[in-house]
Length: 411
Image 1 (cartoon, helix red, strand yellow):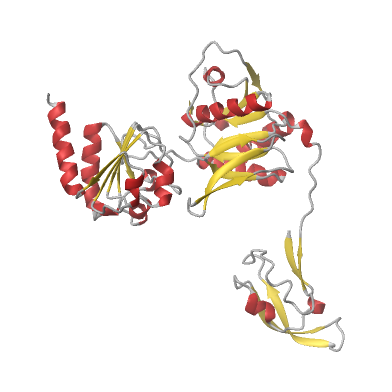
Image 2: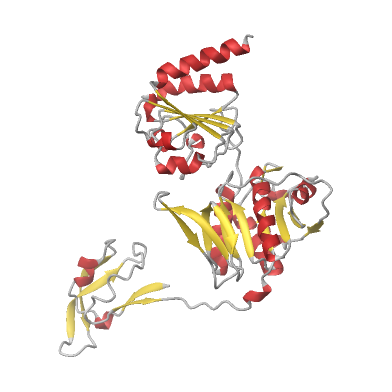
């Protein structure tokens, strides 16, 4: 898809410059011949900066001489019916399977049963050890393993090449990945390469009578739930927020098949390389894995006051979370952000201190089993989702909680 200017039709009127919403068109002084009637030459010429152009088409119709064209790529997907099974990307980091892989297998199992098809897991790694058996116990019928020493850490080029190879060979009708840095990078590159649809950050998945994947995700800041389908191409691709679905109970007796695939060596080459892993040392427990989260917002007042939450978290064996506003202020690293543009969490207990409860934040923590909110504003939106709401100054509540936990700890 691209935008083109027919030089011989441009009369230099400047209408397109005035109407372009992104400032991608300008006029230059250039005397050029015209092919339109009643005028042989023009001394101004429109120039379109393709890098700035969003292909919105606002300039096409107003042009009085039809000098601007947007050319669309034509693509016809054939033999949709041969795409049948469901496949899940079993993400691993540093040799360990991520919990999100088992969450996706649970939803994948449900979808596969609805369509009466098989559920595959794709594992790309260095060493397999007992990981395929774990994935089968978690719900997979078959596990495709691609292993090489170079695949221990995620790299976009080889992982994408592998996925394209696997999709071309096995032709799944649905492919799912977690909405993590790996999953987003992998599926966006893959979907663009094979001209299929991709929905990111899904919070719900189901199938209709025609086998279309109904992909539900928040839109417009979480104020509506958009339902998206990909009816014309396959596979249907989606990334899913971690912690949205619960894993199935492990069944070590479940039968399954392990398939080892050998990928041509040239497909494993990469222009980028892995340098090092830098661990987040601001918390001993990540918010994705925590059973208890204590989270702070702008009500903490200043960066230094997060120390009170870290002290409370240490006593409770909890992780520290945060709202987007304090992340943007630089009070605490992004790895602690809970919300639509941060991480989705589902702890047993979520305690929010000084967080008003913007819809974007609520989208990231509403799956928590039990929510406690502390805020001085009795009208704060977070109280609408809280199981216990405390209208009080957090600087009175946190010390009281710390004292109670110290007493319990000391017997």
